[in-house]
Length: 391
Image 1 (tube, rainbow, N blue to C red):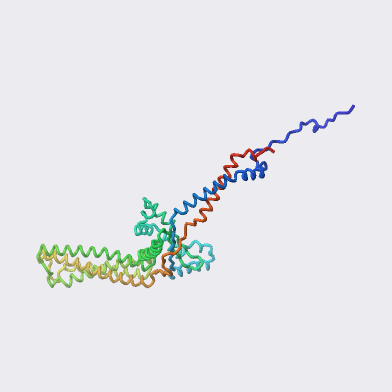
Image 2 (tube, rainbow, N blue to C red):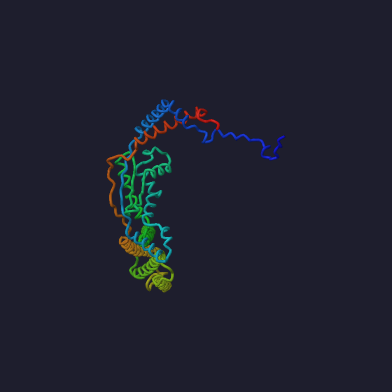
């Protein structure tokens, strides 16, 4: 009688293999897929043809786009200054920081991309109607999409390109960017001389208003008192007081302008503060040394004449101060003209004679491929049970 085996392996039940998922990649019958696609090729080609036609209609309804380009060089002074900074960083062994220093090209591209220039361009070319937008922000975004600023990493020439449906407007927009950059270049204080010029220009504007107000007050006094000129004995002292006050004010303005680029320890600053202190002491002595009239007691001067003298002294003071500020302003303007960051235009934009878009053949090809792909997916989805089977 045969002896039964005690091997537990013989007693273990045989497990049936697990059924594979119907969506397993290995369960797709590629041959069946190809047969289905061949059987439905007419539908697929018709759908692809419909996509081709629709894409063609859309492509030919899209207006042509023209691109005009202008180019310029950044100022050598700014470029050499940035190169010097980079050289110093390299010499100190921190060349890795050189890449973080913004170059002159980056600065000018940032100015071209600024909102102030974008707003001027929108107003100048009435771009809200051109782009059919209502909001200012949407128009500026549309303008940014139609404008390209290439820093020119290889040759160092910055190129400004503008794209528009009208070739003439594309040319005008590209050249307008250069005009706006020239205006921004003069408006912004990019150098120390520019900062001084702007400072003295603001002071001159304020002093001009003060002078006009003083002249109006003097005219009112003349009309009220009937006086035309002060007594001769007061002219010298009045002029001396006015010039002393004007010199003090002018040196204080000059000191404020100097402190924008210097420190309190600078010898020129120390010297100027000493001059201001001396002039103030001189003015105090003049004011307390016997009144406004040289040798004539103030109490004996008619009140109307005294008021006239005061008004005329105020006018003389503001006239002197305005002349001093004007000389300071002219000196700063001449300094600015020597190192002004003028742009060097390489090429102005011309009217483009060929379109840059749209690429209608590419659009139609894309429509054909999309139609074929969508039709194939739809056919396979409907008959997915024909090529999916259980392993």
